[in-house]
Amino acid sequence: MSPFAPFRELTTTQRHTVLASFLGWTLDAFDYFLLTFVIVGVAKEFHSDTGHVITGLFLTLAARPLGALLFGRLADRFGRRPILMLDVILFSAFELATAFSTSLTMLLVLRFLFGIAMGGEWGIGASLAMESIPARSRGMVSGLLQSGYPVGFFLGALVNWLLVDHIGWRGLFVVGAAPALLVLYIRRTVPESEVWQRERASQQKKGLLESMRGHWKLAIYLMVLMMAFNMFSHGSQDLYHTFEEESLHLPTGSGTAFMLVAMLNLGALVGGLFFGALSERIGRRRAIILAALLAIPVIPLWMYGSSLAALALGAFLVQVMVQGAWGVVPTHLNELSPEGMRGTLPGFAYQTGNLLAAVTANAQHWIADWRGGDLAFAMSAWIAVVALLLAFLAWMGPEARGVRFGQSGAGTGE
Image (tube, rainbow, N blue to C red; front, side):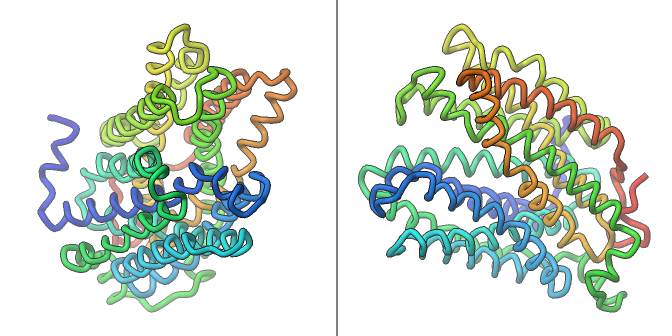
């Protein structure tokens, strides 16, 4: 049977729910990456150093765990659907407000607020989708949901390439408000999670500490696991454009540089879908371990390819593996989360891991400086070590593939 057969078995309503969750994460990532393309332009307008503008990226990442906790608790209490709509409206509004920043300080504050809203979207969207589909479809849908991030990255690069010379950086942030229209789609086509409705009808409302009783060890493990995951993805993505400029000597905005980024994102899309579906057959941990370890032999082609075609193939393959491992994350975290915490724990663990991994780019720069500016070595060594760490953490952790949501004991793992 085709690994994508479970998707064809979804009802129309279930497909709408999956599509809405996918688009939410795609558009969230699209809004985040817009700032990465206009750092120089923002710095020039506000007569500031680019390092100060880059602080906006850090503030966004730092705020994401707060949003995951805040909106996750709201979603566990009031439902996935209304809080997801509120979250989409908020991150779109903060994106639009960024276009009208009158100072760098105002822009940085707005990016922090945007980060809070961005931190809430992934966990709610993932729980809504996972709770709305059959257990056998989770692996494939998980890969699809996580592929929304590279798709958002690609859309941001495309919009910047086509429009920034015509509408400027402020215009890009106006375009970035478009995700608010997703709320209309959610309101018309996406119902509330039946799992959440049953939980609300059968359980008394519990506070955070009561809901997490007996699960703190699991929560800490998931945060460390997601730290490794984020070190894996950010270590392969964040400095890749710098690698293009400094090591490959490709000018910023060139068609060749854009093509390599496009290959990166195409590989991410393929990897997320393939390994997400594969995890339904071989298990979540085995799929993660396989993808992580297969990234290691691809490294020489990715960083040291002898031709443009070899570098493009390396960029494609390394992201097949990196985002292939990531494709398992939405279902793996939701299956491991205890009942009553599925709106909160997956997103909070994800975003806290992201915060813990925020030093990735700086660490790679330090390694490169130690090696006389050899960024290719720094990125290669980083990915190799992190791939081994991720495989080890996945191997030693629990798994709850196919667990029935809404049942007592769900999410406890094997």
